[in-house]
Image (cartoon, rainbow, N blue to C red; front, side):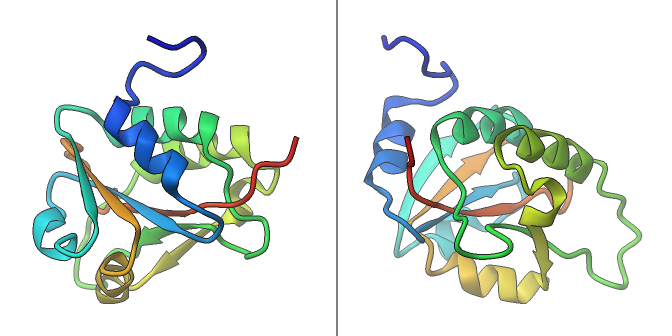
Length: 146
């Protein structure tokens, strides 16, 4: 065990977060995301049974967001024909604001199919058991400055 590391971060996930370099991206995927097919050319970490807000909070404790781009956090836009509400995004905004002084300004949205295309080129995808719809997140890693 380690001191100060959130217990939800498995050794496998910690290793991946540590391996990632500046500008590398990681997807935190909801339970409906096609993780294995989209992630066939990257590392896939199974975190089934965990919800995204808890993982996001734990990851951002150890993972700096990129300050060299406007929006290092990307969410999947709701399709125009869907009437889905996304209250989970409010949770994300609260969490991100704790770890990045840009707050909501660090968050952008991208079209669903563009999100899938970007996800094919990420360093890793975390598969979760998140049930909220449109809960997928892409994070772009920054540099540690201390």
